[in-house]
Amino acid sequence: MKGTRRVSIVTKKGDKGMTDLYCAGRVLKDDIRCEACGTVDELCSFLGLAKSMIKQKKTKAVIDRIQKDLFVIGSEIAVRPAKRGMLKKRIDDAYLREIENIIYQLERKYATRKGFIIPGENQFSAILDVCRTIARRLERRIVTLKNKRLLSNGRVIIYVNRISDLLYLLARMQKEDA
Image 1 (cartoon, one colour):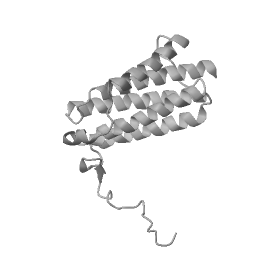
Image 2: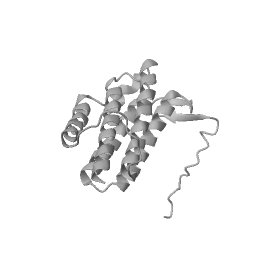
Image 3: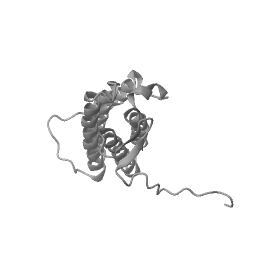
Image 4: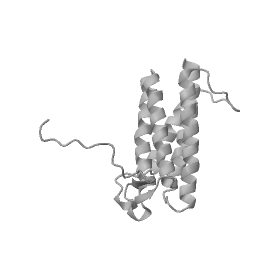
């Protein structure tokens, strides 16, 4: 295309260990908000892998929903507390109700096992168990953000906790349906 200037992905702005966060300015790359945002990205990516492997349309739709909600969580994490009012979406009770309803539906359909499970029954359940463990790490990072007063929305912690519960159930469902 004539006249169109290509923009390189190489900005060289991060070469000294700093990065930009949404409405938070420049921060060190080892800032807890960067760690949490990176964990959101990692979870979203592994969920994409799971979604590409799973055949059931309902499960794909649930995973897609979680991925979209993770973008909302990422923006809540990346924004400076004083700028939170700029966010168009925030995790609220409606998000929690929707995820909990999915969990309750799965619990009715699939008996939940008590005790620990050993991941790896099949590829589908194994990747969902990887996603579950990443969600648990994200939950720990969010608790740190909350304790450092970098995240004011307590529903984010609850939502991520529900995501890990849901991923546990989806993994068990994949074991039984495989």
